[in-house]
Length: 334
Ligand code: ATP
Ligand code: MG
Ligand code: FE
Image (cartoon, rainbow, N blue to C red):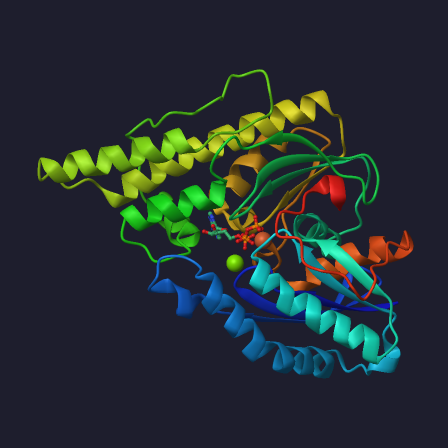
């Protein structure tokens, strides 16, 4: 079974060809980061224009690298939300065009389901499983009783983890997206600031990162005012220690309440080394299998959409050719 998958929800234009939901034949990712860097974040209008300019070439590259023809394909899959409306529409339109032209079924896929299913490209998934979704726009604990069944059992009350990284990174003078560089600095310093671990011991499985972000920014501004220079390494280490502490504690609590044999870490922040090291350590003496996808599959990419689409195809969750994008899509409508 071959699926041609599209992902254009934010600032990556990506097309992949996935075999049987677990094998990558191609996964072309055209990133626009350089066009957005100088604005300190993704500019929606700029993103849409780049998607339009790149999509045709990215499709051609994906087909060529996979060495397949349109006749070989069984379905076309596309991210239809959540994300930026203008960006999503480019992928949705391209996918519908290919589906119509080659008479292929269309599979609408939830972007966050895609992030979780990136794990299926690493190894077969065993249900029930727990997923910690940590990305630019989401921080959620998702319990999956079965394939394609998503239940959010924990959520952020304010900022997403990736968003917090990007915002404090800006204060440290790091270009968007800052997560990777903050992670690097965090391995060079000490946790000297003891930033707040919000909601760490609350009974629920929810997160909050805006207090941590404010504490960080206030600390740096206060030092600026008294002309004191703080160690960027120590700031990064202290910030990351707080984020990793909270993510780890809530995840362990969720695992305690919901016994599973696999923990999937998904989304751009899953690339974080500090988080991976900590979860690896915490789960070392348990029967729980930690799955963190390789770097390239943590950030936005179409391979993960093709992996999720394998499940959607088995469930015959087809979309019609009047499919539109849904920027606020959640799991209740996935
Ligand atoms: P969403 O998936 O919620 O719609 P998104 O697609 O914009 O949001 P992703 O592409 O999944 O988000 O992830 C991007 C985020 O991951 C950015 O905020 C980036 O800073 C963060 N990130 C990338 N690498 C790391 C890292 N090593 N440590 C921490 N954060 C990281
Ligand atoms: Mg991105
Ligand atoms: Fe994403």
